[in-house]
Length: 370
Image (cartoon, rainbow, N blue to C red):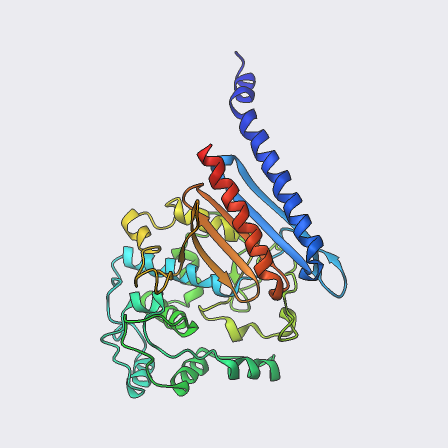
């Protein structure tokens, strides 16, 4: 039997299944978009080696004003989905024995930062890396209604990390004893990027590129907006919208959400691939260390936030997930060994399309059980 004939016999059924799934998912996306045309545009990527799928698609527009057709390779700001990237970089430093997950942060932060928090009543000997990663530190966040109001009034203000740290200090006293409760806050991840910088003696975004093996994994369209040069041969960024705030991402200085709590711009494909490569063991190589990312820190009834990922149990599958403020969602499911990323350009319509992606993940998991 000729090698080509053997290839056809072995792989044709898988190819046909992949094509059928792509057609099914495309139709679902089109139907959902017809029902919610004010979503402006939606980007979708599914990475499923088990089903021979590495498929991107897009529907709608990249600009609500010009009605420019949305291209699946256009990058967007992924906002808080930056946090998994920071968390993985931290665990890579743990792998390298720079510190451990239960190391107190007192000796890992800059002296000036430590003085500010100590003066505000925080005991940095009790707050650990794990607490920052899981949002169980008890540190008051700098993001509140007044923060959004300020950004709304001064959208081009150039925020500095030091300003955001000071704002966290000014907002209030410690929220609770470290490790006793959960309160999501960008301040935790801003402090983690400071720890990366102090540990590596390089800007955090440069260190993260190296720690996350971007060059090795051929991740070329992922960068920190305004902190790094726009990547060569990368398409123009799509506009992202918040109807409630009357915001267009093009009109807001990205520094408001830049230093670890958010900040990364990437394509829908590279976001899915990052999750895929991570849980395939291509970034963190120690399986026990990798499992830390989705181990519950508090009882799961109290918080499903682990170390940079939410561990979500659905009826037929599990998802290691994170979402972002602008309307971005990425998840990996171990049952189907697949990653799904869906970016909705109108924040207000995020829920509808996130539900669509959950349905797609269920279909992939069910296929694996057939």
